[in-house]
Length: 498
Image (cartoon, rainbow, N blue to C red; front, side):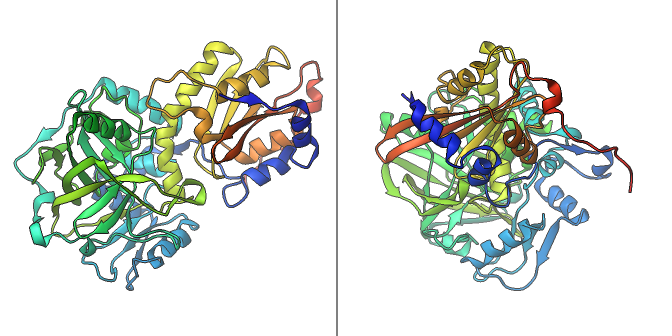
């Protein structure tokens, strides 16, 4: 599958200006380069009396009380201008609520899940909260999964549109980036049944509006929905599909997780929130839909029909597109006063941080494999922030030899054992960095320091592909064996309060 490049090429990377912190500056240049993306601490008093964690509107009220959501009252254009506002306020750490959107009858909210603290607050978590805590939360939720509670009707069915009343142009679906090929739903939770086991699958997918009653639903090859498409296509069947927008945080978090396909994700969302998700019967499909969602779009997908979507500003700040099945819409239901949730795509904080809920599953998969083979591996951080490809930092204590780091790096890129639906590691991971246990693997400033002072080796793995030669880099930034600890001693000052 891959081959280690020759010593001459590896020497080139070590001597041609690609060493140390300079290499990381090239890889992770931009606004994320020295940021910390690790776990955050949530105090008990940050959960005020009367707050109901897991409720979408309660979470918005909490953000408002904390001064973390900006109200935009002037009219904003859906094409490009709204994306510009979201990007500008993200730099200030703010979510945004747009009260007046040109051509639309409902407000838009965006930038909600920019940090681990926000995600933790939305789910009612306290104490340290990050990737590891999220993984633990989902393991517990799967063990105590709660099937959804069906009720006769709910707020989501206060307005019901069918037939000629369906017009996607009346929903505030934005064109966020200048190069986007059209308006995209970016925070829609796609709901369908897995035909192999009859269990509910929920996921967040990019969905391009291409007509008054048609949207494209992209599913990347490593997703559960991609496998579901193939299963329906093999049966010669269409599938009922619903898109829920403005769902409760527990359902949103479940939608971006990698819960195994043999577990019902509506039930897992109930386990995450500690009580069943309230659902109603779909208006025109056989699906159960969240009763308290803001908007739900229903229809059927013929998995044999494909139209290429895009361009779409995706992870890493580059444009993508791909063959996507078409959802023929049969109904749109929503509250009387709906809010339309939007995620700024591309290299935005919300897009990246929310995606790290998925990363905690894939990262744990890689960590388990490494720890089974290398006892010195202590921890791992798989990040979706920075660069056009993802990166991983591995904490190592007590390496056995100077050859071991290279073996660890090659194991990462060639990983074949997976417990979750997962792409080959080499297809999405571009860089692996090994550091000692005294380095904070969640803080790129700390990692940059380690590479700049301890870089011992650069392992480059190349692979010939149809589109050209692709390179993966492994950086061994661990202390050399046999070197006095004083050589690696970090400077520090006595902390004082000011």
